[in-house]
Length: 266
Image 1 (tube, rainbow, N blue to C red):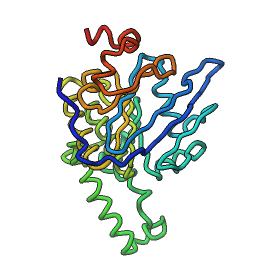
Image 2 (image 1 turned 90 degrees about the horizontal axis):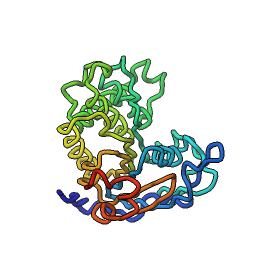
Image 3 (image 1 turned 180 degrees about the vertical axis):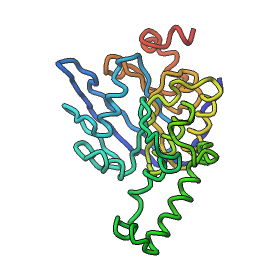
Image 4 (image 1 turned 30 degrees about the vertical axis):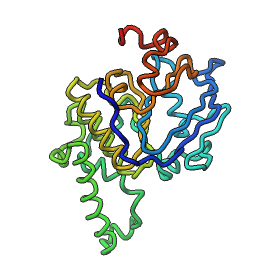
């Protein structure tokens, strides 16, 4: 099995720290006392059976849900309770298991939307074509093409997003998330629906994103991808952490084999 690539010295200590996160729905704990740290420059996978609490954990990290208990520090700052758009502006971006693109807009327009919070010209200056607004518009076009090049979609820039094949739509969502200039990228099952070739290409793109200085958290069911590219793996079962370590450590953990991985790894 191929070993995860080096982060090329991009580590920056603890970037994000979750402590005691708990969330219940109707008396059932979807996430129960979850604590972990994310070091800068790494790729950390979160795995577990369906219903293990992976997406709920993402929802807690991005303020879609508020936890019943617990804390999340990002670069030393508490982010629980902050609006989602403020968390994005701080440097945490996310993709979703269900693709959420503007299908009737072009590929470039979808990425440009993610760039707007990095601009200063308001509606009036843009409408009246002030020089500063024109410069920003030119910059957004160049930056959008640069991000599309990273994910291999620069040739589809003028295509409608809804016309792209499924795998390319996932890559477009990744490019749009990159447009927010994140420090941390949360990917929710990015390989879902991809074939073997597309999944391998996705792994290379995730490496590329990491090498840009973006720390990656990956919720994924494709164990081949997880074990190939991850530096660390955290395993959830019934909302609780049952294991955490390197891919080599996790894949031989008896609790993990029993809960999730046994049949695939055998």
